[in-house]
Length: 305
Image 1 (tube, rainbow, N blue to C red):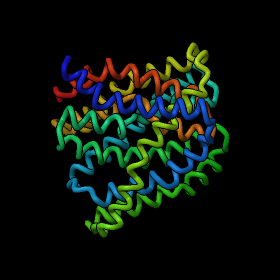
Image 2 (image 1 turned 120 degrees about the horizontal axis):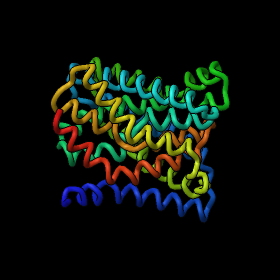
Image 3 (image 1 turned 45 degrees about the vertical axis):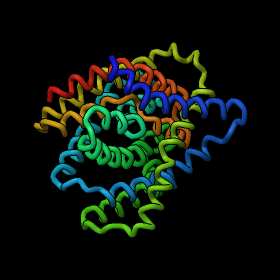
Image 4 (image 1 turned 90 degrees about the horizontal axis):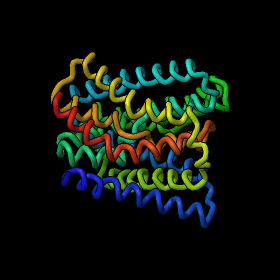
């Protein structure tokens, strides 16, 4: 119980504080959340990606395992959410919302501090690499999924190709592969700008929650999507780990990180490119609150890998 409250105090309280400030800011100032979404997508994310990849000290074998897990687990989650949405006859925007919240977990601003507490610095290093790959995916595949709510597949692909994060990821991966260190001044600049990413997306979540119609919490689509994230995703992550034969700390960290609540940057994508930002924001809020109860069980399960 003491560990539970330690996690809540060091991880959950700062997240709740940022969301509350975003909520109040929206209530009193009515800011343009699309402008903030642009800032997050086109400035903060690329700086975070380049800085993190270029400065990574993870060996190539571990990087390969993490990349393979991320790709396979993403494919399974996408297929499961798409199949469930089609079978239950979701409308287009609700289906896109469930795809986003099922595929993408809040592995960054919530997941990384949790990993540090649960698995120490070694587990944290594994988690950072997964976060970088996750941010690349949410800003490429996530952009494609969310923009298809209002664009044709071709238009969605064009929008994805215009995303600077793709090119930032390519530069970061090249620097990592060739082991080329950034000059200290550039590395500090990327860290300074990229470090604002988590705070901005949390503020956007708070703003979206202020704008949300909470009566829509009665929608069956929302609760099916919540169940997919809380119950379906951990099962698919366990299946992925079993298929790849991962063991030990790598398996434990990846399992916990993929089982986090729905990603806040899914709200950013829905806000920017269309879809159902209201359902997405409510999903993020509900799964985040529920995570205070279910994550200790997930961590306990993970220690058995």
